[in-house]
Amino acid sequence: TLAARTGGGDAVAAAAALRAFDARPQAAVVDGAAGVWVLKPAGGSCGEGVVCSTSVQELLAAAMARRWRVVVQKYIERPLTPLARKFDVRQWVLLSAVQPKLVLWGFSEAYARFAQQRFALSDASLRDKFAHLCNYSIQKDAPAADDAIAENMWSQAQLAAHIDRIYGAGSFEARVRAGIRAIAVAMAETAARLDVEKVGHGFEWLGLDIIVGEDLSCYLLEANVSPDVSHSTAVTAALVPAATEDALALLLDEGHAADTDAPVAARRRSTLYGDPPPTPADGPAAAPRWELWLRAS
Image 1 (cartoon, rainbow, N blue to C red):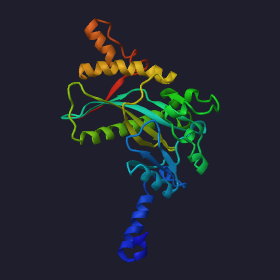
Image 2 (image 1 turned 90 degrees about the vertical axis):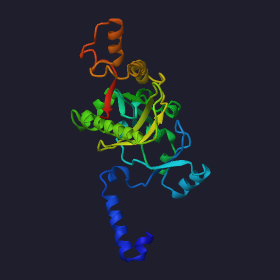
Image 3 (image 1 turned 180 degrees about the vertical axis):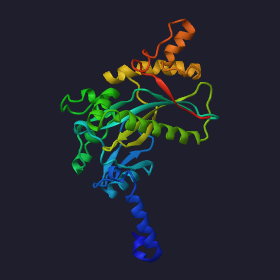
Image 4 (image 1 turned 120 degrees about the vertical axis):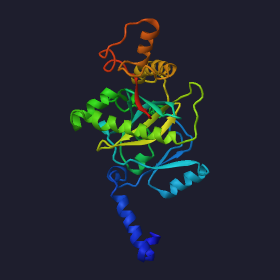
């Protein structure tokens, strides 16, 4: 604005920058018309202290109250909203090595975490954490609305069925699943540029929170260290044991048995204890598992 008022070259440059900003591919989904921003306490968890607002004054006051130790993000204003509910996708990833070669694993089954209340961007709705924060630690205490989404959570299969029914067969795999994997790889490559060193069998199990736009574009909200792996719902209870067992086997094997479709744990049992080796029919369709998503050459 100041540059535009001065006229001359500064005004032209400012106008060009604004046009470029508005022309971003994600502008329509991210920016929207409401102008909503999200403020999160740095190092926070479980949705505590999160503020969704269109007021710069409110955001500044919240930041000042936390001595500026905050993260501010643009709110995704046009998310995909099955049954008029906001959701995010929790995707587990595992970094088993960073230096000298980056190794990233992604769990084959993500899941969707839903808000209990209907999605809206009114000022009243923005103050309703049960409409905008999808953390299960918050939503488990939401006042009961209906049972359309059991325990406010869908399995990956349920989410895929919904998306494929609306956008066409294969849309989930080709657009959403591929988008999630691309985000995970970009996150891992960013981590590899940090000055970190693996000690022993050290690893990082991260929980990526990803929003899906109404055009099926995917956006990373945050990467969580020590994500919740409790049996909090029927969905997570079906995934956690497989993820835990497979992760332990993978880490102990250093990934050497990672070239077949079966879960690493099953391959390890076959090698060590003489169990019959699993067949592909037993693996991809039936058993959630860690998949090798990136091994830097």
